[in-house]
Length: 169
Image (cartoon, rainbow, N blue to C red; front, side, top):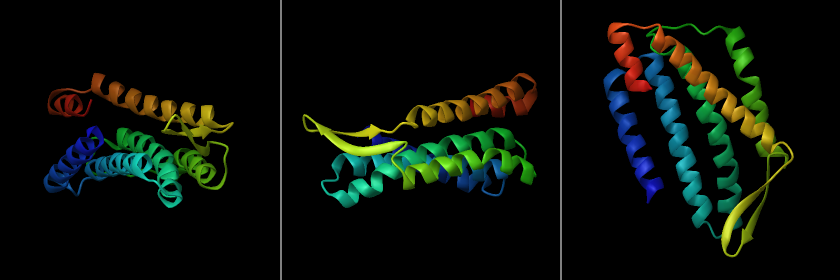
C-alpha cells in the first residue's frame, strides 16, 4: 500500500512539475529523480509479488539500478538547481558518471553486488555480494554530496532563491 501511495504521489508531483516548468534543466532533472523513484517502487512491488523467475530476473536488477539512478540524478540536480540554463561540462560528466555506470554494469553482469534470491520462512530476500558495502558507500556518498551542495547554496542564498531551496530541502 505504501509503495502504491509513493508511486501515485510521485506521479502527481511529476505531473505538476511537468505542467509548471518543464523546460528548465532543474525541472527535467527533478523529473528524472521522480521517474527513478517510481521505477524503484514498481520493482519492489514486482519483487514481492512475482512468483516466477522472470519477475525476479527483472525486478532485482531494476531495484538496485534505480538506487544508482536516484542518487546520481539527485547529485546532478543539486549542482544544476536552481539555474534555468546551466551548461554542465564534459569534465563534470566524466567525473560523475563512470562510477554509476560501473555499478550498473556490476549489477547486471556479475554477482559482486547482488547475489541470488533467497527465501527464508516464506520471506524473499537477496543475498549480497562482496562489493555490496562499496555500493552502499557510493549511494550514501552521492546522496550526502548532493545534500551538502544544496545546503551550501541555501546558506548563501537570499530572497526568492532561498524560498526555492526551502521548498526543495
